[in-house]
Image (tube, rainbow over all chains, first blue to last red; front, side, top):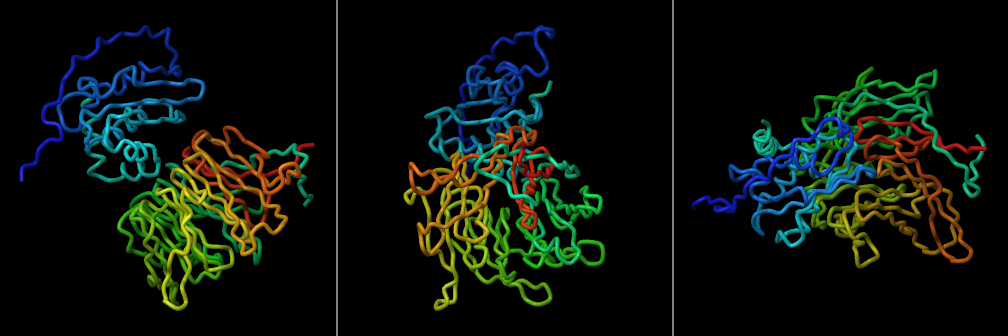
Length: 154
Length: 327
C-alpha cells in the first residue's frame, strides 16, 4: 500500500506583494484584516512545503474584522474537496491567532462555502471550543500544528 | 433577608469578589451542597485547563480563599466537577479519559479512586440525589453509570449507547433516578433503569423534530423541584422543558435561570405571566455585559444562599455575585 499525499500536485501561486505599514498610523489595538492576514499568510500547509497564501488557501479578502464587536472571521479554501487536513489547517489558524492577537477577540473559522465535501462537519468541529482545546492537548496533533506555524516565523 | 421583587425590576448583579489562581481557563464550578450546616463554610469547587481542581471557601471575615489545589491526578484538562450529595466526595472528569474521586482526609484532599473506561475525553460528571450513582459522559459518545460500593469502590453498572456524537453533559433529576444527557449530535436523551430488564435504557430522545435544538446542546439544568429543565445550545437558544407527569398544571415557580455565554455576559431569565398571550413565557430580567473578559463557561447558584451566583471564565477567573435590588 502506497501512502500518497491527499493532493500530490497543488497549484502554487505567487505571493502577494507585501506592504510595509507606517507604524504611527496604526494603533496597537486597531486590528484589521491585513494584520490578521499578515499573521497567517506564511503558515505552512501540513502536506506541502508551501504557505497557505501560495496555495490560495486564504487571502486578505477571506478575512473580516469587526473591531467594534471584537470579532475575526476567516474563511479558507482547502486545495481539494476531500482534504482531510482541513481541520488541521483550521487548528493552525486558531493557534496562530491566539498567539498574535488579544485574547478577547472572538474568532470564527470556516471553510469557504462549497469548498469541502464535509463542510458542515468541518465547520462544526473548528468552532467547538471544547473540541479544539482537546485536540490541541493531543501531542502528535500539537506537534504537527507547531511545525506548520514554526515555518511562518522569519 | 428581604425578598427580591422580580416584577418591578431595578435588579443588579453586584460583584462580591474575583477569585484568581487557576493558570488556564476555568471550565466548571460546583457548590458543596452540605455547606452551611454543621460548621462547613460556603465551599466552591472549580476545575480548569491547568489540569487541577481548586477548592475555595469563605472565611469568617467574609472573604474567599483557595483552601486546596487538587493536582497530580489528571494529566490533561479537568473539564467538570461535582460534589456527592453528602458533600464528602468530589468527582472530577478529565480530558485524560478518567474520572477521579477526591475525599478530604485530614486537611488535604486525596484522590481515593480513579474510574477508567471511557475511550477519550470525559466531559461531564454527575451524582444522583442519593449519592448511589455517578454518571459520566464522553466524546466517545457513551454515558457510563457507576455504582458506589463501600470503601470508595466504584463498579460500572451500565454503559449507555445512543448518542451519535460527543456527549457534553449529564445531569440527574433532583429526586428521581432519571438521567438526562445532552450532545454534539444536537439531541437530549432521557435514561431510566428498567426494573424488569435490569438495565438502563433511553426512554426519550428530544431532537430537532421534537422541538429540540438545531445545534450542539451544551448544558442542562433542572429546577429545584424537578418539574422543569432548561437546556442551552450552540443554536443560540435556551429551551425550557416541562418534566412533570402532569403537563400544563398551573404551577407557580420562582426559580431564576442564570446563563453564561461566549459574549462574556451573564443573563438572568424568569418566568413572566403574560395575561395577553396566555401560557408560559420567560423574559430576560438582567444582562451583565462584560461579566468577564472572555467567555463565561459556567454559572452556578449557591443552593444554600439563593441570591449568590458563581461564574467561571476562559479568562481564568471565578467571580462571586450577589443579586440585589437597586432602589
